[in-house]
Image (cartoon, rainbow, N blue to C red; front, side, top):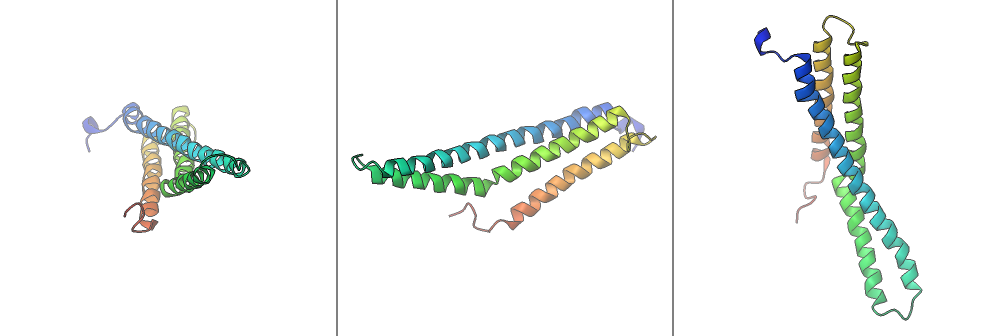
Length: 150
């Protein structure tokens, strides 16, 4: 590849690295919100059930208790199906690893203290991204074939 068609370090950082850091960070944040929201639903619904069980005079209490139990099951199954907790952690770890590589490079620290620092950066960043993509592919393939289908 000629020098005229190669990315500069600044272009690579802006167009690829920062883009990936932002993507993983945003996905991590969304998964965190979903995970915590579903867990709060489970906790609140589970806490209300014993309270309602003791209220004999409450109209439709059996229906409400059954509905809360169903809500707990749906929230737990949804969290398990979409793996919000696992994805939150994995996406955050990948985002932080990419930031770490960026700042080592910008600071000229090892392994970026040699003549081929930019090439090392590209290799290490692309390896991190490729690893994350491979992990995702393995996770998707390991799901039951009928998960999420009727």
